[in-house]
Length: 309
Image 1 (spheres, rainbow, N blue to C red):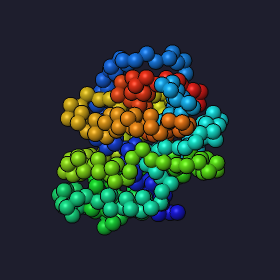
Image 2: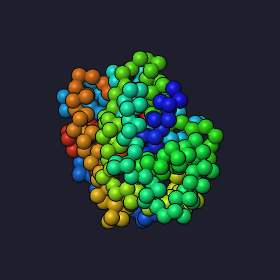
Image 3: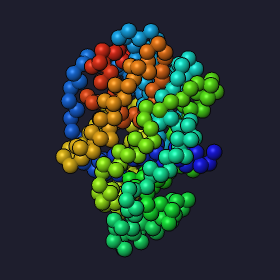
Image 4: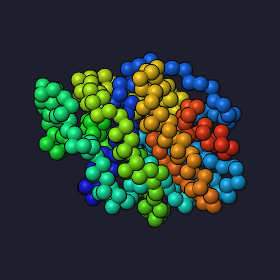
């Protein structure tokens, strides 16, 4: 069970720490483009939405998660609990209930070609990183993770930013609730696909950004605190403004890590929703904006209605 939790943490943390890893919170936000489809008037913030229309026999649901929170903040509303009870299946970004896949995913954590982090940094930088890891994340010594993709190391550090003794993720809370009703749990992506995304980002760039992360922890503590506050307020509009930045060099990676995956999921979702009720629980950053899952579903003819959460 401990190994499974470590594996789940490794993959889910990667996705929620992408913005901090590339320093996105440091850049000024740009104005979102106006949505190209009409959305219902909404007078409250929420992370929970109902999907209906376009011939669906049953409604499905969309919920924005945060992959790591202080334990006291990782809770389900009464409405969310009722939805979990009544849906047929739950889809996360990964099938986190599949231990075999999680164990098999270990090989995808490493860089291709035998590259090591120590090859990408100067001796002084590597020594500084090793000392930092020993202090902040002693459970993962550099001798163990030297071949891991730098973005993964950054995500492991990111967990330590939260100032609380016990941490949990919304996926884990939802999965526990779903198991109590023996709901089938599935994934929109495989661990192999998800880990492979990071091979498209040069390892050298990942290593440089990792060191920026290590050297600017005070900034990232503040950025993470702001993101958690926005999540707790269920303010997707503000979340979108934190994610969207005016950094031209990051455009190709944002499409790879966020927008392209949104499009891919929306292509899969109709088949999953046919004849059954599904709860899709994915990172909240995937929901808002013109290229977010909510707007893409509406463009495809579905009604996406906000629900109290």
